[in-house]
Image 1 (cartoon, rainbow, N blue to C red):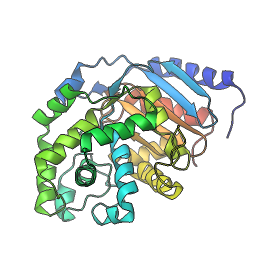
Image 2 (cartoon, helix red, strand yellow):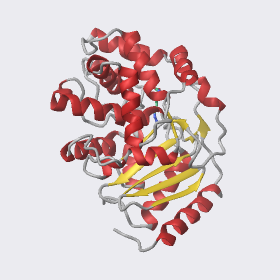
Image 3 (tube, rainbow, N blue to C red):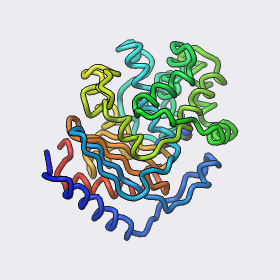
Image 4 (cartoon, helix red, strand yellow):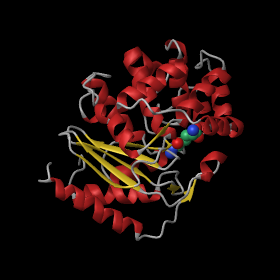
Length: 309
Ligand code: DON
């Protein structure tokens, strides 16, 4: 699906920006990680990275924000590339229909998380990376920098420390995983890695660039094959069914693309072989997904007729 001409996309993003910002922003900035509550609710940006090489920016696309759960896609990518299908012995690929930090399901299902994008699954994936990477935090950060072709990307140590101080549910999840022998490394070490991966800061442009492999059969912006085409297909399927937790059905219904959200207010979505689009607006709806972001992406796929359905 191709809309002719540069002006068209530029105009579409401008119109959507106006339409969305005229809505009352009923969302709230996440505060359960105290450091995130300091971000103003007023930011809003959209960045469209087309696989044909054309890029379009509207609004606040240069300010860095906490990518939080969006980082789970990157950690999944490294673990899947390193371990292949053996990864699925420790984490399933079914939507959970529950909030991202839900605990009970994990006990009922004997320590096998429903999928790698809820917290329990991402903590198992973090454990895999702590086991297999030589310098886990440094190597993971380098992977993300190379994906985005931008060496300025970094952890935010204040955000990581803030989550460490208040992340009681994640400690409960990690201890439960440990009790079911689904965590090889010490809880502290795995969570230190996990809190750091979530604290990575990127802007809309960097995130769109970093997500190119999922829209481009595994090949990054720099043409490195970071996963196979088959693995990129599988990661997209997981994003479509599990990327928005108990709002995954709603996102497929309204937007119709694989994607991933984070409590920092970012959402990245993509149409294979066509484009990656990132939105950022820190105020979240009651399910923990960006209110403006969801609205903008619904308008974008409807107005450009570009969902996978
Ligand atoms: O573990 C947490 O709660 C956060 N570091 C990440 C949660 C998150 O981004 C959920 N996404 N919408």
